[in-house]
Length: 268
Ligand SMILES: NC(=O)c1ccc[n+]([C@@H]2O[C@H](COP(=O)([O-])OP(=O)(O)OC[C@H]3O[C@@H](n4cnc5c(N)ncnc54)[C@H](O)[C@@H]3O)[C@@H](O)[C@H]2O)c1
Image (cartoon, rainbow, N blue to C red; front, side):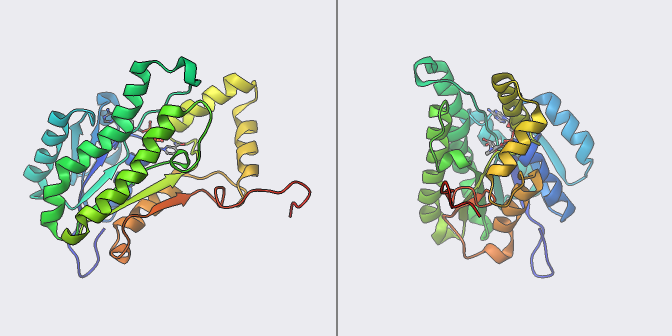
C-alpha cells in the first residue's frame, strides 16, 4: 500500500490466519506493507506464516474478545513497526440455530467475537491510528449486517452492530484523520467460515456442494459467486489513498444481490 508519495502502511489484521484476513495480508505484503496477522488459532497462524513467508510479517496469537490480548497485540505492532496506521477487523465466528435453541453461551460467543472483538481492537489501536495522521479502520461486516437471515439472530445482531459501530467511530475519529468503513460480503465459500457453511447446507439439503454453489450463483444478479479476491479488493480500496475522503460507509460486495428483488413474471 504505497505509492511515490506515501510510505508503506503498517497494519494489524485480525483473523489474519485464514480467509479474507489472510488474503488481505498477502495483498498488503505484496504492496510493501508491514503486516501483523492476529488470530486465535495457532495452527492456522503457523500455516499462514509459512505461506506468506515475508520479513515484513509479524505473527501474533490474539483473542479479540480479551482487552489484555488486544492491547498486547497493538503493543507488539508498535514495537516492531514503530506505529500503526491500518486496522482490519476480520476475526469472526458464526453459528446457526433457531431462536429457541440459541443458548446464552452461544449468543455471548458470537457477540463477543464479532461485535465486542471489533470494538476492543478499535479501542486498543485508536491512539496509534490517530497518531499516524492517516489512520484506516476496515471492519468486515456481512450481508447479514443489512438483512435478517433465519437462524442467525446472534450473527445478524452482531453484524448490524458492526455497521453501527463503524458509523459512530467514523464520526468520532474523523477529526483525527482516521477513516472507518465496513465491507459487507455475501457468502464466499473459499474461506474457513464459507466452507463450514457450505458443509452445513450440504447436510441440510442433501445437495452436492457444486449444486448449491450453482444455485447461489444463479440468485446473484451478476450471475456468479464472489471470490475471496472480490472482498480483498474492496478492503484494499478503503485502505488506499484514493479512498481518503470516504468514511462511515458499509459497502455491499454482493454482485447486486441486496439492491434488487426479482419480480415473478418480470424476469429479464
Ligand atoms: N465467508 C463468508 O461467507 C463471509 C460472508 C460475510 C462475512 N464474513 C465475515 O468475514 C470475516 C472473516 O471470515 P472468513 O470467511 O475469512 O472465515 P475464516 O474462518 O476463514 O476466518 C476467520 C478467522 O477468525 C479467527 N478467529 C475466530 N475467533 C477469534 C478470536 N476470538 N480472536 C482472534 N481470531 C479469531 C479464526 O481463527 C479464523 O482464522 C468474519 O468476520 C465473517 O463473519 C464471511
